[in-house]
Image 1: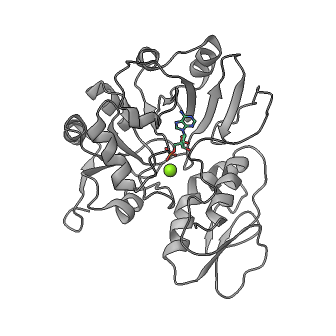
Image 2: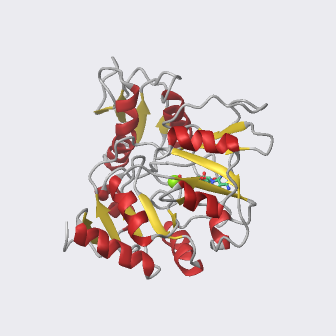
Length: 309
Ligand code: AMP
Ligand code: MG
């Protein structure tokens, strides 16, 4: 992929990881594969590095970032981990679960990471490339999805470069992301209750009084938007539709012909990117069952169908 792009592409090998780690130490930006989507990584303890994330993405400054850690010990140095949070971490880390926890003051994080909140969103990812970077730098790493703010999330290096070429230093090429959807975000409150703020690959039973209420600062109604009208629950194709199929509804791109929701999640953004690029002026999407990870898929689709203002 070199030559065509201003942004450097790095292989996931010793040299590539070392180069990515050096860029991060120097306050640069590297798009990195994770098990969810590609993240735009920067050291979370540097104001200059974190400011670059917001600038490269065009992200509103009130939308806080998730900080990634290599270990529970590192997580403890940044936030207060209650026994309830500890249980969730023991069960789901490393993996696609982000915990929103009371943040420790003087933990050395850039204030922009939390957008002024008293809480901090933390995750320990399982992807080997991301883990190597976290371990070799020893740094807490802020990493929102590696796309321009409001646009479709990236699940491949090509998606990253289509959105951010020339705006970031490098992309670490780990191929396609396994899960394909952003992490589940759960807030662990002082009374020990758990509130799901964003549905994702891990289906948690929300123990909070508000149950399934979904709200996070910066969880904008319009997001993941392909830049053309999107129609949900479509069973008929119109001539000017790029159809995204599921199960028995066949499409120009099909999420999962056998109706497998995990496969559909992994392919969702690739199909949306294809629809965005096609000459068809509209995108139509087959109905997706509202169960398991289908809940998270439908959450993202509703945001993709809401026009930006
Ligand atoms: P992204 O990494 O682009 O998928 O977005 C990260 C998500 O994490 C956004 O929706 C934020 O609102 C959410 N988030 C980050 N920090 C916090 C926090 N302290 N409290 C609640 N939500 C948060
Ligand atoms: Mg995002």
